[in-house]
Image 1 (tube, rainbow, N blue to C red):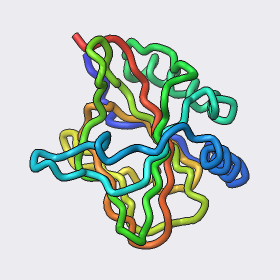
Image 2: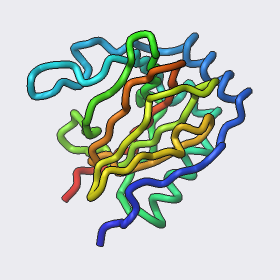
Image 3: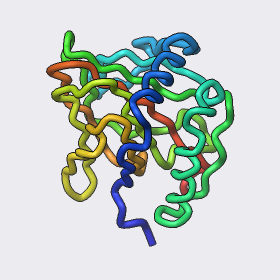
Length: 189
């Protein structure tokens, strides 16, 4: 039996001073900046997103978010029931920055694994924005189109099934920052 939950939300899990610490840590310690070649493309070979994505290994930020991620594993056990592996310290997390200057967005997509023996099962997004922004709304498309309003709240976190289509609308004012982590396990059967 599959879970009836499309997503799970936690409000205000990080205070602003912690968000600022995490943003500073990521900006000074990221491992890579995502190249255009590594971004998602649509069927017409057009890039689906026009934001900045910094990759940082989980080990570098684990101390700040370990308890949040543990909560995700606990919710999975009770409500989703996926077979998941622990996040390794060398696993990359995506730090996404969407700016109003270029109306940053991310078109419809799903999160998938490039590896043959594993699947991304759950995606975790943490709002690391330091100020409110306009636009940058997050939508999930399961049986219905769902706007995930909780993710607009600074310091909030959501988790959803990675194979659910989702998108971010253009940011029209300010800057939207989020950290994306992917909970992975053996291939779906």
